Length: 533
Image 1 (cartoon, rainbow, N blue to C red):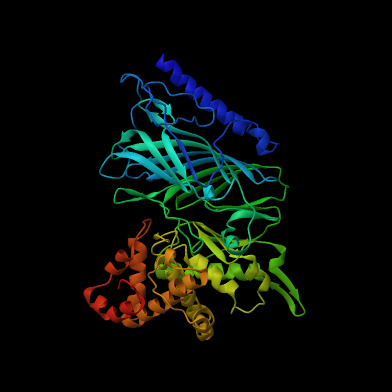
Image 2 (cartoon, rainbow, N blue to C red):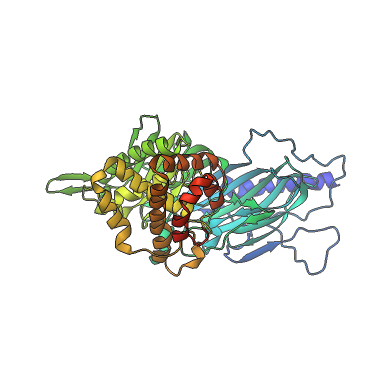
C-alpha cells in the first residue's frame, strides 16, 4: 500500500537521523556514520528521483539510505501544501541541530529550511548555496527530503555543483505557500591555509580556534526568475545572501571545560556541552570556538552589548606597561557602533561580537566580525594602526552588508567602499589629528587606479581589487560629499540604509535617492570614478 511505503520512508529517514546524531556523543564522527553517503565533492553530483516508469538516459542514485519512491498518494491522502503564510513571517527560516566533535573538527548537522514563495508565480525549483562544498572533503550531503508534498515526505531531484545545490521541487509551489526541506550533512572543517587561501580562515581551524563562517546552506537570491549563485574566485567575496531567521542548537563533544563559543543572537546554555542560539533577520549564522578565549565586554549608551573574544597574545607586556589590544578593540567597537548608529540608523541586533581570528585581515558576518591576530599582536598602543581601522571597518559592515545587502561579486564597492570610508568618518570624529595620516596611510601610499564599480572578476590580484574598489571608492565618496555638502551627504547615506534595510540592492537604488539637482551636481565626479556613471 502507498500509505505503508510512505510510513516506511519516514521511519527510515528517522533511523538515519538517529544513526548520525544519536551515537555521536563521546566518539568521533567517523564512528557515528557507518553508512553509504554522497562523496564529498567540489564538482557535480546529481540525483534523479525514481519514477513509476523509468526514463532513458536517467541514472537514479539514492541519497544515503533513502528507499525508492513509490507512486504518488491519492488525492484524498495527499497532504496540503502550506499556503496563506502570514506576511509577518520571515521569508526564510533555518532550524539547525549540529553536533560537533571538537577534537576532529567534524560536525554532523540536521537543517530544516522553510522558504515562503513571495513571488507572483509558482516555484518549480529552489537553489541553496553551500559554501563548504567548495572545499575538498569539507561537505558531505547525506539526505535531502522535501516535506509535505503530494507524495508525502520525499527526496527531490537535485544537482550539487560547487557551492550551488539546484533542487527540482516535487510539486509547483504557489505564491504565499511554503517549501520545507530537511537536510542531513556533515562538515569537516579544513585547516586554515597559507597564501591567498589563508584569507578564507573564517571557515577553518588553527591549533587554538575553530571558525565557522558560511558553513550552513542558505537560500539563494532570486532575481528576474533566476536563482543567483556567483562563480567563486580568489579575489573578493561572491556570496549573495538574503535575510533569514536562524535557530541553531549546538552540541560540542571532546572539548575541554574551558571551551567558549562566540556566537551572535540570543544565547541559552542548555547543558555543559550544549547551546541554543536564536538570531533573527540575519544573512548568516557564524560562530567561533576556542578553549583559550579571553572575553571582555561592555555596553554602549544605547544598550548594545559589545564583546571581544581574544587570546593571550593580544596583551603585550612592554617596558612601559601592558598594551591590551583586546581592550582597544572593545573601545573601538563601542565608539564605532555609537557613531554609525547615529549616522546610518539603528544597529539591528542586541549584541556585537569582535573575534580575534587566526587568519589575515578581517571578515564581517551578521552580528559577529573577525579581526586578524596580526593586528592584535602588532598593536603598540597608538591608535594609528590597523587594529583601529580594521575593527572599525568590520563594525561598519553591520550596516553595509548585514543591514543593507548587495551583490559583492558584481558591485563590491557598495559595501567595501562604504565600510572603508566609514573608517575615515570614525577618524574625523574621534581622532581628527589623524585625518591626514589616514588618507596617506590608507589610500595615497598605494596610488590607486581603476573603476570603482568593477566586479571582482576583473582583477588579477587582490591588491588591484582593493586599490580600485576600496581606495578609489573612498575618493569617490569624499568627492561626492564635497559635491553635495556634508549634511546632504550623510542624509543620503541614512536614507540608503533605510531603503535597503534587509534587502539586496543595486547601485541603481543608491543613485535613485539623489534629486535631479544632486545628480547634476555629481555628474563630473561619477564620470571620473565610475565605468557606468
